[in-house]
Amino acid sequence: MIVKKVLLSNMKETTNFIQLESSRDEIFVQIVAQPFRIPTQKSMVLITFVEIEPKELILDGKTMPTFSESTVISTLSSQVAELETSNGELQSSNEELQVSLSSNKELQNKLLLMLESSMDGILGLDLNARHTFVNNKAAQMLGYSAEYLIGKESHSIWHHTKPDGLHYPESECHILSVFHEGKSQREEDLFWRKDGTSFPVELVRSPIIEDGK
Image 1 (cartoon, rainbow, N blue to C red):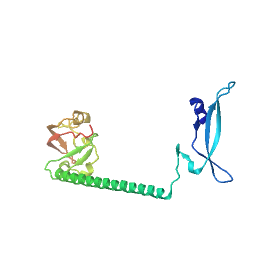
Image 2: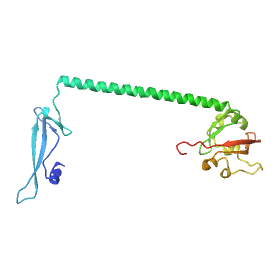
Image 3: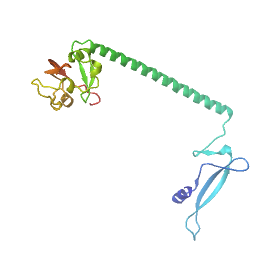
Image 4: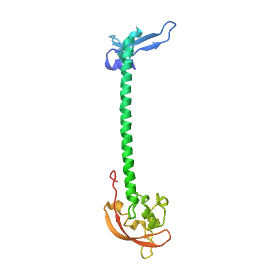
């Protein structure tokens, strides 16, 4: 690799240190490659090995200085202080996150209480028309438990039949059209209970848009 670099740049190149095995103490060398020319020959590269002292070791292209004990202690102390500062900042951020999560949970609980205390039936559907939220009033009106309805597709449970008794295809369901239209609308309709009986409703369908969806 170093020979190729020399031939391309036509300049002297050196490597970082290389550790060699030896019968005596460890030997560290640096490879020096430089171009030279002989009139009758093509370009050539002269390679030499230069032994270096441990205190002059080159690591990542930089000479490693020989540190005194006081310098090492000072450096370590500085790093420990930086680590403690980072840890303190992380702990502070974690505390702020916990406060934020606690506030969000408190807000969710208040919203849940408001929905449950409503005299109207309230349903939440996802983009696949599955129940994501059902308050107690809505569950009572439909004859199901809220736990049973959560996660189940809505149209086939309580909106499957037209007032004239004909099958109501989901593709024609105007309630689900809110996903495509994205507009709120008040209207009258007919819902079906678990026992097979129906009841008229006045409903408001409103989209909840989050992250553009």
